[in-house]
Amino acid sequence: MGYALNFNLIWRHFDKLWGGLLLSLELAVISIAIGVVIGLVLAVWYVSAGRVVRAVIAAYVEFIRNVPLILLVYLVFYGLPTVVDLAYSAPTSFVLTLSVYSGAYLVEVFRSGLEAVPRGQLDAGKAIGLTPWQRLLHVRLPTMLRITLPALSNTFISLFKDTSIASVISVPELTFGAQWINFNTFRIVEVYLVTTAMYLVTGYIMLFGLRLVERRFRAAR
Image (cartoon, rainbow, N blue to C red):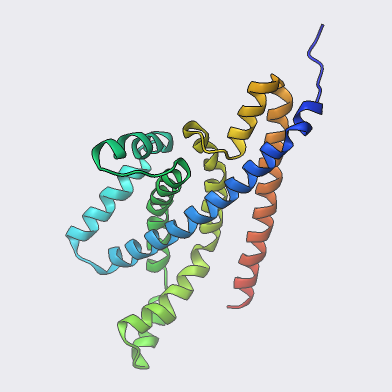
């Protein structure tokens, strides 16, 4: 006798999936917000500082980009508190990890965007008497944002999917909710079909919204 699909038990525990989806979105939004600050500050520092600072920032970026995210999650949640006297919850630990992780990728995104600003715009700002800080604030950053917005959108969607890794430290996000239902109902196919659909629909909604923002910025140029 073949496997018969039965979604009744999944709908009975759907609150686990819905609550997990909302938490996944919250983790992604907080992490990308902190990651943007990290990436932007380090990118500006990188393009304006000397070799030593550039080497330190480059080392951070290369380390994060070449270490699996799940290993970083384990290091921050299990390893760091044993070395330093720290105590934090699993969600806080994961947000810290994902923020540092996204910040490393955004350093490169913002750095390339800053270096892609046309030299003529900077010279024009200098010609009208803008200080270096004013040129950065009113010329380089707005232009850089328009250039990097597609990459920033892709990073956010990728981070939303990466929140599934939080399940390994028992953060009750969407994948953890799916695992809980699977463990308690043994409806493997049904729960992961529904979870996949939730990731897909949410991802496409975010993509649609971010593309509208991109078109709005292009129209404002």
